[in-house]
Image (tube, rainbow, N blue to C red; front, side, top):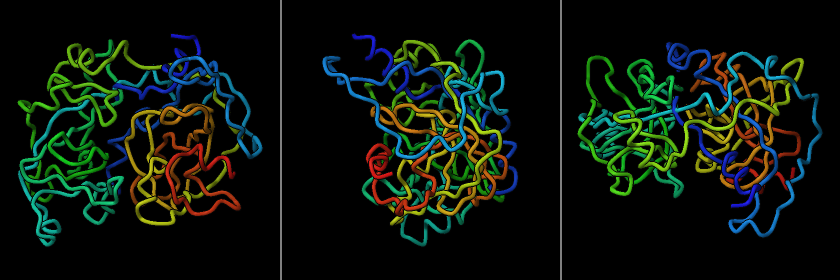
Length: 341
């Protein structure tokens, strides 16, 4: 494997172990935001034979200057400090809103409340987990020694994660655990996921691991170490830049990766932002996105949102933010949007 390929592999990996009202406590300082580390150069093709030039960012630096890691905003950590695992749960109840649709089970939503928008698949279908279907609940950001972190706290009775192999989607979101005395989901430690993972949960992109057995599942999920690059090569502003989350041309396009809030750039998602949300952009970092190098990632703090509380920090694709002349988002893939600025 060429040196460029090794660099791309490091930069392109998803990081591993990690509302209204009490969501602040669930995300927490440090859990809600991370940054990631050094990208020496952009990747090449799979054979390592043909190098690709980095994509030109079509807008100015806008006051973002390199800073030492000792001076980055509070809560920003590298991918080496993100090591998320998942635990299996099974849906045992049906929400009233789901029953009205002639379905059983629960909807996967963008926020931890019953009025939040339902997440869509890449084909445009709403995501539900039927009764008897399984859901992988996300842990906290990390634990010492790449061990399994404790479970991320429920928010008003809702938990974040992604559907299991017996559901036709892997899109992350919120489902009810126990709300107003009604139990919708409970732990299912005996659950076996895909055979190729030895039954372990490996995350929505097969880049994380199973909380039930950290060491064995890391091997089954293809882990060669725990965590990614350290925090470096980050550019920040002296004063944050106030911005809005970009409009989408359709409900389907509002479910593209541009609207995920992540624990690190090119990393594990822990929440959604929605069109019209207001954020303060604190820092930027150039890095891959879904195997394509390179795009701008923005480290933001939530100012106003229906899905996330004020003060939550995390990374999102810069293409998810509004910019003068930028049309409503109509397709996924940040690099393609960059070419038009």
